[in-house]
Image (cartoon, rainbow, N blue to C red; front, top):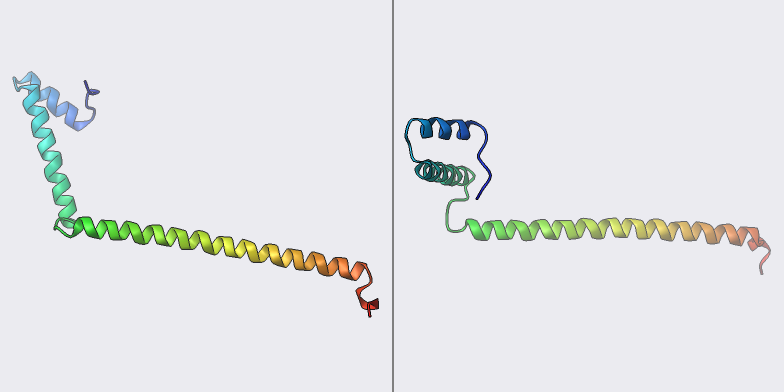
Length: 103
């Protein structure tokens, strides 16, 4: 059994139950209202047609590609920072060992 509903919907359901309405009917009405609201929200967002599933799949693919590219860019930045640090370290070692005196 699900948890009791809270908020305005719960108050309305309690009020209707006190007035003699059947709780099962009230839950069915609430479920239908939720489905209609979801359908309306999808229509307003332009996702109510048959191509919506493919559009969302494509958007997910683009988002995944963007995340991969961003991760790759950060990896490249850190790799270049690491290479620069090693180059500076090697230059420091060469100067310490007297690089100017080498033939």
